[in-house]
Length: 512
Image (cartoon, rainbow, N blue to C red):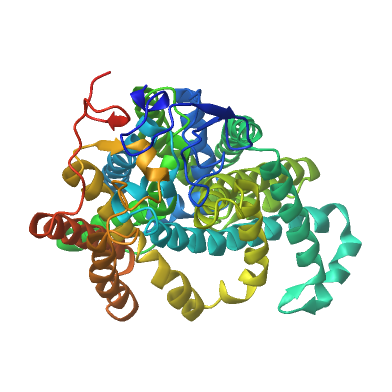
């Protein structure tokens, strides 16, 4: 545990430590912390209790969704051999694991969420730049995931209440009456879960991930027994298998797709790593939840998908459509509710927690963690995701622009913490508006970080929109953000050089 829990920097003159209980966790709010930067959700945690299993369960909830199922299955349909797909999966998920560990460390060592640790790089005011960008992306995807889960719930209504089919004939703003009912049910369920706080969310994700595995294994056993193991082919593509450079290109594309899929939760993983008992516990959880879990889930996915061909006479890559094709009430109810639960899990961890902290960071005294999350929930409805999600142009210009900035934000944070700051953070100064504070920089903004966002973000957005770089945009943006910020700090240093022996300095490089 870092010494920052009980000490302070020389710029904060209050030795008294106060504690408070809140939905985001018990925190330490020192009287010297500026109210413009502080509430009990954003303050350093008083106790970090999450084990490796909790982190493992977090990644299970993130992977085990309809989107994760379809994404994993699509990799096996790229036109390359199954063993090549597995290599691409291993390389891609190991990259994700390494990057996730990098972004986890500063938050775990200091006990603060993603937007707060950014204050040490962007400045106490400048941190709102990455917070707002990440928050907006989460709002958009929150609506999309809720819509997808609602579509799955529709199948249950139609199976058990056939008269509900009449509700499909009435629509408003592009969505049927049945669609609104399902969307509203899931919207309220997710909001109610979030409203209970992080401890309830932790318990939910501890249950949701394993529950999906149980159903997936049952589904796989049933489909394979019906199809016969000899009829299960891991190569889902049709036509000839790619060879030579074409297969290498497809493998690289699969690697990029894996990293891009996890880019959102990977960026703000500090929101969860802050709860870890130790950095070692977080790393163990990441290993189990990423390489081990993702590979097993991917293989299970492709076994289920490939078995649908001999069983149903067609390839089905949607798990909800698979259980619907089985056409037994028990299968539809069990499978439907399980994958709805899984989608709720990924929505909570990937698209609810992030904006809760991010929007709270903008105005801590006016926007609590709970209020920030509800702003995201309401915003997701106003975006009417059922309209633009089906539009290639809508996705391209809405999420393409924001998503291309995830890479630069990641690169800047990593360069700032590991290169410029040498893993040292003056925790109390992240809550100080004093011009003498270490993270005041210039008017509360680190000009190097702001310039790096623009210098890396603009070309990445343009390449994504007009050069069709696709999933490579994250890598391009990350590299540009890292190099731009590192170069600017070398030419015009702005980051404070801290002495790890100073009171209140968290030293991530320390072994203890």
